[in-house]
Length: 195
Image 1 (cartoon, rainbow, N blue to C red):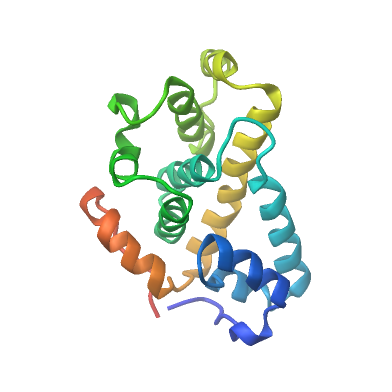
Image 2 (spheres, rainbow, N blue to C red):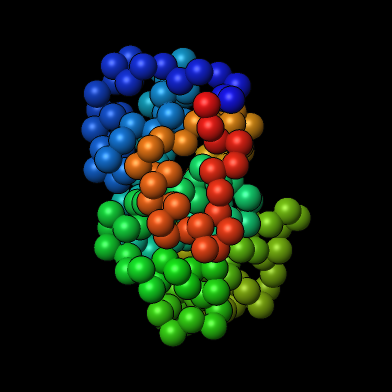
């Protein structure tokens, strides 16, 4: 059961709902909960927009997969479901989604993507596990601007992982269905994110 009941979708500003309609097809209950304090919902959505803009080599699909890896490390079932759904909406393949947690040995990811995923694992870990060797590996494949975007995604989901796990945010129907189809074989369950 959620700690704070989400507001009705009609109480969320339209520009916020419109942004999430593109990525998820639904206004997340996390945004509906943040909307109890509209400035928090607006600030978070504006940060989300800025982080998810692509100015270099990263794609919308890769950013969602990075969010998935960071959320998996943190253990947030809610965010794993959302990032997997968004990755499919942005063109990920079943093979990439099925192999994401085994990215190190997968033929479905490039060396650059594997370095970014390794960075996501280390940066999302507590204590933080980013070291000089990992930084050097990341720099082999990504520009400074790309690294800023990568860490922006990881940090954004760090906020969301804490928000949704602490709030026990109820997972919406579409991400639940998608995760049962794509993630259940990897051990995903809805966890505490039910009504």
